[in-house]
Length: 294
Ligand SMILES: O=c1[nH]c(=O)c2[nH]c(=O)[nH]c2[nH]1
Image (cartoon, rainbow, N blue to C red; front, side, top):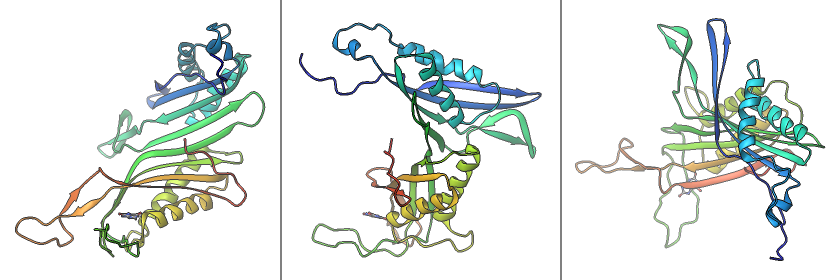
């Protein structure tokens, strides 16, 4: 057993936490799925079998709830992840770096009879806000935010042509098609963020304005690749603290359908999720290193 233990870490995956802040009759609620990873002086656990000094993954799970309790007033996932990461590196001498992932379930306050409900919530869409935070004993806290499962679609203002046509190609050029994708994006901050909620809303606005264009006319997309690049640039323009933006965009095809008695007339489609195109890229400001896609 002479192999070199090159890297190691240990953590707890997908710990689910509900947190309610009761402000009088009006309640605020979040549901978070938290994953942790600790880099620590624990090589001996792998190479000798001794677990001396180890922060057990069960303890890491307990800390998820403990720090949730400590957040006595409403906070963002970025603030929570930073507090949790700090707790690990401050509490445990052998831990050099804590890596924290948090996903926020899309609970929204419901409207009943036109009024916001005091304590009722619903999920209207599966878009999930995400964060990944690294806290080391030395060095700055590194925060990456994002979203996943954000399904967007437009029924026109999308085309795809000019690609290589050879004997293996069946797809024809098109100047009008449905464009649909399920957006996963992460954006890494390179300077302090005064308000993570505002930064998130600005990034989502940048994505939607760029994808759809103005409400009356929309905006033409010549391909998923070009739209991806434009959306990333829109985030860089709208959120000055962001240095690097990653997108993964599956191309969810709606295929022209010829119902038995008629021809396709831009009206009936075969909706598919598989197989799908898969298009991704990272776009950075000049001189900024791309962040890893997570
Ligand atoms: O926008 C697109 N990009 C592609 O790379 C691609 N490939 C494909 O078959 N259709 C599309 N559409």
